[in-house]
Amino acid sequence: MSRHDEFTRATGIPVYFCEPASPWQRGSNENTNGLLRQYFPKSTDLSVFGAEDLAFVAAELNSRPRKTLNWNTPANLFAKLVATLE
Image (cartoon, rainbow, N blue to C red; front, side, top):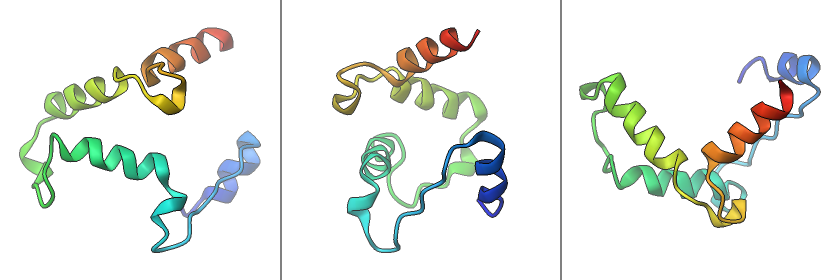
């Protein structure tokens, strides 16, 4: 994100950086890392997986209801957002 300032100017969306060694500032990130560990244990060499394997895991995670999303799925909410932009 070395060009985060350009992104912010272009979109009007501020970029937030968490402080190092402060996992409580990255709740969703830490939760997602835990979910990914179900598929890829720590120290797994991801280079042995193809694009289809990674796409499968992404689809699985994006189809999983999340409490923080009021039990919606990321995929469902993203589809709704895109529909409002069309």
